[in-house]
Length: 257
Image (cartoon, rainbow, N blue to C red; front, side, top):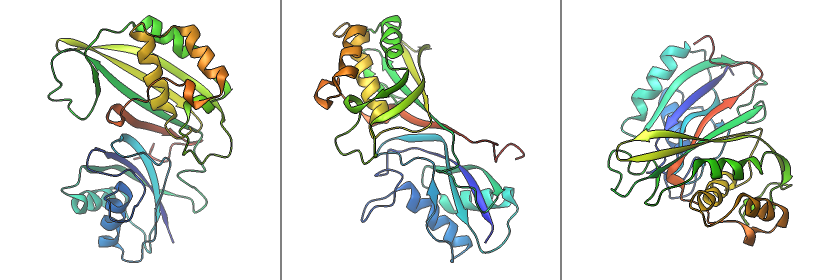
């Protein structure tokens, strides 16, 4: 059966997350139902990352095995037609080798978190950012972020429900940049690693927000990391500012498309 990689964008607000769940809407279910409109024999699809309820994606990747060959452009167009009106879009499709796997072939995941600081309520970005009303110090947040780079035991920064076999991960990048925003400032956290623990990025951002607000120091981030204790973590921020932005592979399957 020919295998196709799909690059997927979605608004996570209406969904209980990526993974199919009983009696709750999921992004996986929406994509699989669209695929079955084209090919009733399609089975379950696999994704690079299982985003939680309310988390968005601009570059999720999944793969599906179909019973016949498709032109990738026609496949993405047909899927987008059948996905309406769900806030899910197929940005690209590509034929891949039968051994290629959206999850296990990936070398890197990149997440972006958007944090908006302003007193007036967010309107156009409602549900797409985490908003706080107080000012934040980006240099202090970056100093705290730097304490997390590298290979560490991230027990402090993972959910107690995390099913990963080990809390040890290598964090390759965590940068904080500012983006001018109408009557406020948006802070964007760019986080990259081969893989992540459950709630790891939201735990990072919630902790660094406390540093930016002056309630924590960068040294407190180091102490929390070294504690290897979930109770030492700062507040876990809400999901609506988090985006799965990109997935890296040895060769980009979508380069030709």
